[in-house]
Length: 513
Image: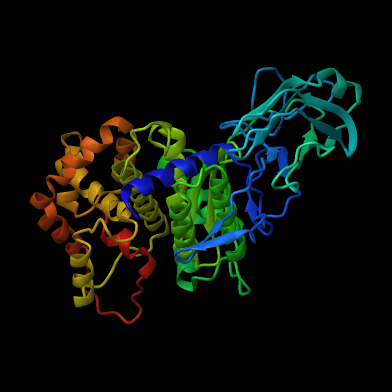
């Protein structure tokens, strides 16, 4: 796929991440943020999947002339139903019995077809209709309709008791608007009212906690069970805990306290999520990029292991859990690095400005790759394992040599370019001179230095990335021999029958500084 098409797709993925309301699949782990848990009644299965045509061997959906109203999430909000204890907020809070609450409702037209007439939205409390919002006038293509800070007195009059209650909405209950999909007009949110004010807490680990969690990794990686499957050998929560514990050691904070949804899905649900995401992309495109979208969809369904998106108002990380533990945990950490970039350096996120480029995508890959390596170094140090040691063989010489160059026409070129950016930044960027000294003296960066490299790359502004990467690549010939030599120096000559190697960590162990 050409670089321009890749850029177009990334921008489109940003659009759907910000504006779509993709359904949650069944049989998944989803982190529960406090006392406000979200459920949806919709099936994950893509709608209208039979209405397709085949172009160059790719199935492309037939565009509908109809609009589609659905529950809406504005970016960095908790829509489409938001309940808070004060006005002018767009994030959920835990309501307290007897205290005033404010409700926000968000509806989205998820197509390029405008809606000319108004419509109603019915609001229910514990399955009883209590209110109806009348949205007057037209709704533009990809437009939101909002009703903010409403129903305070009405909810107070219900004499809500402590415990769980359900708020739900029904869009266009009279079916005044003819839509391409009538099945996604309902949404419900389970909300727990507290008897007293609840103080928000942060996730903390003691040193003993970290040792206990991370010391299990060598055993798990040796057994290497399938994470989700008929012979499931590990609890999904344990995978989440391992990733979070290692990241806590790196960053000093838990990703579970961030606005990040983590989902480890079985294969069928993962493919459904991909299909659903691309269905939204098709709905928000005028047809210009349909073939490119179909190609990217099929490529991801065949090869993708994990994905970071902006969905339902927050950063969303999903991982295909049908693989073995080593692949799933590495993929999860890699995608969580992308999520942290989105939160810490949102100006680098796809589609934020017109300067998005292949170089910017490669910088994001460099960040996630180095973060992933730093994570494994942390695990290695805490567990006392030898997870990143590999024998010196002729095959590994060939492996390193073959990765010493990169081809812009092959696969996900930005991944190969990301590895080069890490090496060249350390070896040629004067701001990273201490890291260069460490790399050349020790043959690798420590996890502390790897995390510093991750943080440094986050400081790059999107408008300067292209020039920065071009400058790095101009030094490639000067440093390529050094890069290969450092990589090969990591190989060890060990002849022990019980020496273990972990092939899933080969890239992490050998191909990054």
